[in-house]
Image (spheres, rainbow over the protein chains, first blue to last red):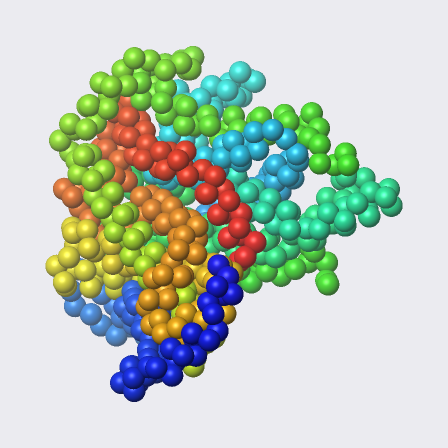
Length: 318
Length: 276
């Protein structure tokens, strides 16, 4: 791909030889075509992004009931949600599962990435195998893990039983159900995040490490003092991704209760996304569901802001 | 340089990671190839049995799961969305990377902002009501249309085009009298092919796996494969060998894509991460 292959003389000849009508057309092509090229995206954005967002806000200000009548509610849906124990429980569940899943996941992914960064044989095969969980389908995996976490015959309880632990009813109790679901999330995403971290690690200049080893810094110290701070941009990307994914968690807890949005008999693992789904498509309370969707968005913004501040601290200020 | 050599601990850690990544899939195969009573046996059976074919036929012929329709529909939805997203993204990416127009930076920023909003969860209620009023519920276009909006695709292709198509080349072609679309077709598309592959694989997997929106707009008579599994799981949750055969069928296309394009997927992910 070299432009030297195009002789300059012929180019300017072409320009001079162009008839006037064609020049006008080419001016239009240059001026208008860029907008035509980006317009499909923005038309789709208007139809399937902006419009639903705006109407969700509009719906959230009305009361809908099963007969189809609507009534202005003002902020009534929002105040009702803030006083709704079910909504708070879903929020606590979501945040708790997010934390239980994300904190170990980030640490594991970092150490896994560090290990993947070593020189060794079968590099591609090893990287592919840690990515394997990502290409499986969420529902399929949730079905498998639900069986693994079954109370009486699940493999997890059987394994724990060998160490004398009594059978846990993973689905019936709050914290165990959170752990089971967080395990599904981590199984899927740890390898992916490790690969992303690995990509970030490979952009760190090697002379930094060489200089550090000459100064006598241990490998562990190099990891904490060089690798981690230099990974900050990658970490912001990974953490933001996990925050959005984690706070909108839906498929795994749905499948864990066989496709039911109640999230267990006591709602012990119902997430906010499931709450929205249940209010909208089982109770047909569109206004209430829309208000909950906006509060979920607020939750994501708060989560993203906290994470951003936290990650900024990790690397120190530079 | 000792630090680039793996220690024994590193090797053990990697071995464990590989084992844990593969085990649930192996377990899926074990249960899918056994009988129901084996699935609840204690101690657990760890080796595959001989009923895989039988279980797969059972799930394909199951009258309520509509599994064949589910596989076909998922394939249609994923393919249509993938091709459209590639088209839309390469066009817009080319404009953002190589063409000058007023408002370019502001529009690109808008694309970035849309990426941060979880539109799927946020907008489900109005989107659903639109589909109802158009009488599109239960049809595949209701699933396909909202997913043609893909900010990540536009962003990725902008980055790719910026990197692999030099401005000088575009300008030279223009001086030679090539129209914008011709430049896109003859110069940009061949140059960004690796980026298109990454975006395509990514989009296909995302669509194949999608669950919430099809669950809302489709019904059990015309499902995608995830919805077919969901209906089986909802009504026959203890028919493990049946459901596991279904889940195994549902991930075979993905595993096939992964094995065929593994190098590109790993490479593309790592490249995309550094660019982002």
